Image (cartoon, rainbow, N blue to C red; front, top):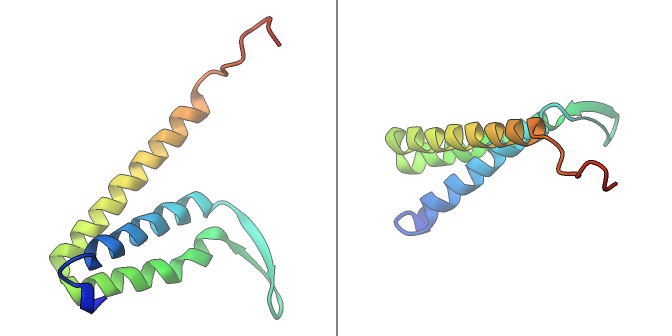
Length: 101
């Protein structure tokens, strides 16, 4: 990433960071069993956390605190928007016309 520091590095890291944050919050309530060496019961958020931590550390190391806070704000905004969209879709009435089933 340091090689692309001035061109595509920051947008790429932030894009992956936002995608992993949103995915981990959508997947957090999903509980799955993984049989790797022993049976593990984990939430989806637990699986994505190492990627999120690595990405925010990379952004902080390469671009500094100010750009890291900007990335966190973008992830927060995207998360709020996805939550709002999920809420709107889940509370919207069905599109099936009555009497035409």
